[in-house]
Image (cartoon, rainbow, N blue to C red; front, side):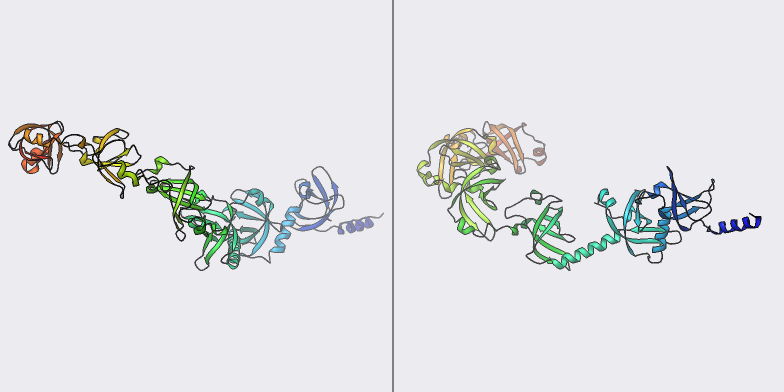
Length: 515
């Protein structure tokens, strides 16, 4: 073969190769595979090399498989052509989308991974960055984030640098608005809808109807009385509610829960006419009475005054506990106010009808001290009826500031009946009347003008009370003692006084300290 022939053949051989430039996308065939790389024939004098990692998502890879790659480097330190299929896909993506997308456009994509400050999202082969602050992924699990497809808005686009920043916040807002409009369009009075408890307050619960929030007021939760919405509902509960009313202009929806069930008060007059005897369960105990549930959704009030004939004042909290079963009688029904008045004492014969025969004025009886007021003490008599000893009927001579100065709760006492009034359920009792009135004797013992040494008992605004002897007290009028001297006195101090007035009828002694 001549030299000229050899040169021609060499030139023809090199003419079969193409020029390859860095950053160019080319097609090639796999001509060899090793443990780490695929050897790709891209039509250049040198073969290219592609990492096997970039072929993992291609099925049935083998010799002859055609792939599209990006030329990263024409010749590295070893004289190889370095190729990248991933970068080729990204560049193709930019070439495809570059002229069609702009800031503000909406695109679909999948989250590839979470990185510092946000997420990497695949948008048709382009990797975009989704900042955490714009992700709107609150309440979305990572599993759902990594396996679902989402819609995004292009927040920032730099085509020259191939930089794409996404936002999902506006997309979520738009979707919510669309859902809200759909819900508003579907709402109708009397409609039943499913919802989720979003929040609870003292006056009710806010229910998410799927984009529109409604208020379920505490009065519309149950036909029975409840003290707080949390007794029935918890945040996150799913429930069916009744649309009572709505106002789109003011974004208000009124909901009902009890309206889904039949109103137990509908036939209340027929079921519980006055005089009906029923059994019920105590559901609440208050100082003024007891609430009794006589059937599901129906409660009545057993007022403290209707518990017993015997005692005029009772403390229901000492007599009942929640859960107690009681028998009561219906005495009044008010359907409009949903109120039923109950009584226990009406189940018994009124003992006050016989009180006039049992107790006559002047008779001496026994009883037990059951309670106090500022003006007297209540005594339960052996018949179960209750009488009262007024503070003025406890002692002939001693000034009593409070009944407990003389008596103790639970104490057994002997008293005299002063008066009986069955119509007003009153029995007046006396303690001092068991003894002879000593005031005629006291008047003779302390004549006007007598000077005696007394002991200070109480210093008041209108004078000083002093003790002349045990259970005999007198008052030093404020006009009968210097103000400075009176202010300096304290209980137990001794004071010489002069008797200036003795009133047997009023049972009072007046004295002067101006001796």
